[in-house]
Length: 283
Image (cartoon, rainbow, N blue to C red; front, side):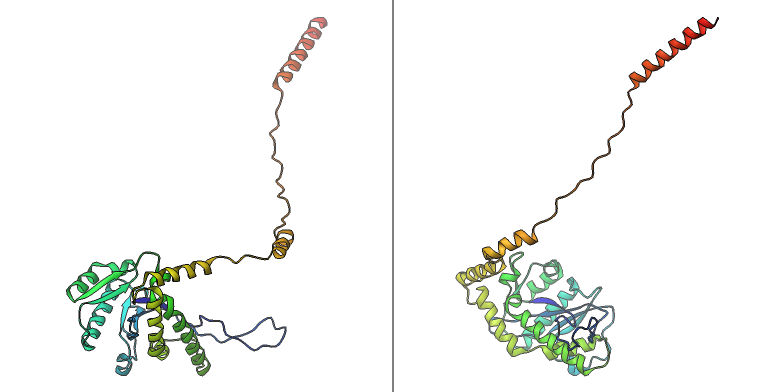
């Protein structure tokens, strides 16, 4: 299981405009709240319904029973991020779904090491209900989390297409919580996400268990993150035209003026002697 953030207009759409136009308008749809969707897939391609976390203290208005049957549940958090309480609600819904599907226990649940996943209420509930929690290594979800590796990217692409079609159908510019739920349910393709989940488990080496597959995926990801070697001619052009910077001119430091007090004292002494001699000759 893992959670992801849903935001309208995440992708850039093509817009037809007059050549040379400086101001190109595009209809957008926004929300004034944060939406978290919790997803869960199994190694055999089974995909669970989406679970939503919204900010606030009241359930969304206008959520029909037919729509409630297509989702895992709706939880409320202070800012819309999953917390210990909402994770416990998801675990309870997960346990109910396991019972309805006649899944034999114990079951193994994989997740990353976020603090909300390691809360005491959730751990206690899982321990007493036959749910074995397995935490993935820290900072490795991009390598070992099947949802991050193979599921979420295609789902977000489908989600952007659904948002685009809905934006063309409607005249408004805002989305309600019920609208978000309807659009996510529309984009929640169980068949496509299931096949991607099977590929994700195999790629990460979690199932079938394969250390070689994990290391191969790790090496491929490591090579993608490296910058490709540039041709020598392009390197020289960059070095001559791009990396040539004017010399840094540092303003001269202002030096404090020093007064030779010794010379001034000697002059004063000489002046005093001359005045003294003139004073004596006068009398």
